[in-house]
Image (cartoon, rainbow, N blue to C red; front, side):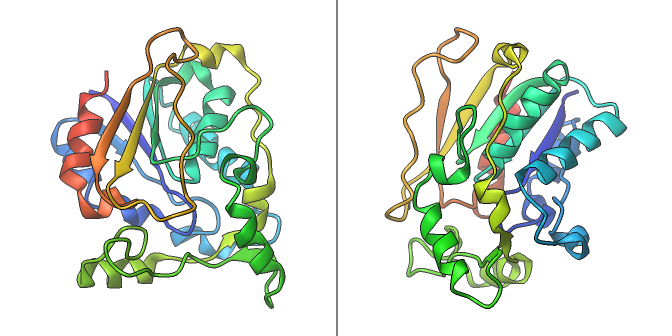
Length: 241
């Protein structure tokens, strides 16, 4: 039995994993999929002070309070920053780090450094009535849709889930300063086939920090693969060792 900890990205909440969690559980694994501060059942905690460090603390607290070990830690999108930081906070508890169509930072970088188009979103928020919140990305024509979701029923479900993302989360830098985290094996899962312009990802280095060859898998899907192709995603996650 493995323990999977699934961390949602910006604008989403734990409900985005609802189709994946039972697939992993039915294979005999333990699964946690929390909402980060400011989202879902924790929406009432949203404030200007919520930042990346807040979300890192959320995940570390869950791991420690539940006494989780040998965790397969999965971060989607913005949560690539979160899980990278968590791995450096509690490296002895993480068995595998998965970047799911996610930002992959270096020490000291923020979301703006990893994906410069993020600054455009921050600048737009600065001219709005609530300058510390970034609204969800707009829906685009197919095949892009809303985070890659185009099915009408799924779109309605996703729209009901999405909420604004604090600017502070995008500005705070990661702290990746524990060399012990370098030993953690990593897998990158890239959603391909419907990438919108301006949101290109960095190339993955050929070698992981632990010296092993990098492992990069591709999933034909829009960005929110956990909604559009949950079985395919679960199959990949179950292959991780």
